[in-house]
Image (cartoon, rainbow, N blue to C red; front, side):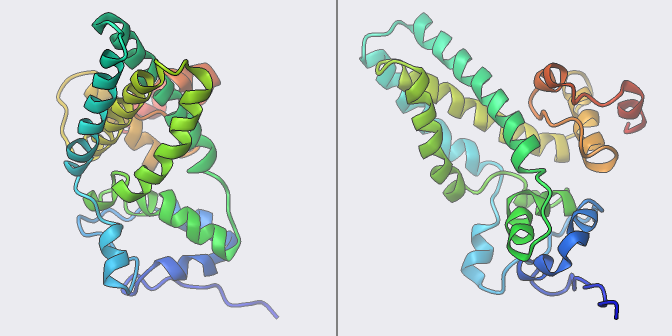
Length: 237
């Protein structure tokens, strides 16, 4: 006896439905629905509120933290040029972390109830509803939690007096990433590099979703061989 396939009801909160899709989840989540209005995820109003974030909240919340980190570095005796080098290193490090997370975590294959549910909350919602403007940037509460492992990673590879500067650079890279990501979906760049990056990212959403993992840069796609063909990107225009 063949079990009947589960059907997601888009008119009901989605989070606790998607897990029931099992092995069909990956196919379902990569069939995007283009709509200005995003779906409801939770029946609970507070949980639903925490999933929605305006793009401008990211620089508003995190740029003061960046400034504090860089000011602390200067107070520790570093020159402006030294702090600038730390910031550049931090930004470059972020672009690598951005690529690794997007490729190996956000696009992990899942099929069990709870892994499907977790993936949908983490990234699946964005691929299913790529034009939902309130679920495009990372919620500040979740980002704050991820700051702890990122800080500890920086501490492992830097000296005590350079940790703040590199962390501030990485955090600035994150702000640039989230704002760029929002702009690529909702802005209308008329010239490069914005125009190319928009084509590149929309190609990832609507054509080849296992290629083109870079958001702010295509550098690591070049390095690790996940660059989609030029012809495919041109068709996305």
